[in-house]
Length: 341
Picture (cartoon, rainbow, N blue to C red):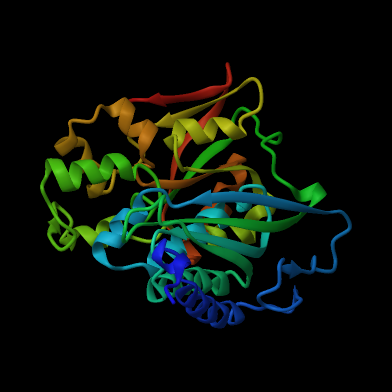
């Protein structure tokens, strides 16, 4: 007898195989804080001991159309790492330690090997942050997604002592902006980047990306950097942190500025990585749009007192992350302004 659900495009046997593989990967992320059984309707994790007033910090995000590059290259695990690292950075800016993660994979036709590769990357990044992959969802939506396409999103739970949480209210005029190097585009601007690379330049994933000595796949799939190792040891010195994602430096730095504080960014304080210079030149993208769409080589900005800059930069150096003093906070209307050299 014909399986009507399979004929409609949903394959339950494939889903069961994907769940089996994903369960094995999730098991490798279990920490002493994990509670309950894998495969339950909800994931459970204990709040660590030692907090007086623990505050949970939650964030949800995705990797956008970077998944189209991954599908085109047939490399799926790195976008799983991207997803976790992006979310870790989003709670890190509030001073939070990551506790648990949930992933969501949606596709037209479920391929267990692809799903397992995606979750392999997720699990690898969870282990790197000593964080439990507490659960997730894999959805087959054949009427919504084209064959070979999928979407990837995730939710993170972190925890911070209430008195230590970062909100931006500690920022003062005279504070210094310290920029942390990105590894490339991270997870933003891919709709524009793909159009320039694949259509305007006519390159495919195996071609050499101009001015880099690396392939298009290597450049566009460079993993979104986690700044946890660089930032966590010196969180007590931070006045604020801004994760530079969609909206670029101006769209994200403004989110942590209190009233009466203007962030003045020294546009010449660091050199753009080649990928951004190529995209701007080949795509005839204006400077203003480049600043709004891409991170331009700065994936995180710390706002710290001038006396703390050396210690904060040294912690980043120990973690293998390059930093630059990229500006300062001045008294003025709340906003972000670029100062040209």
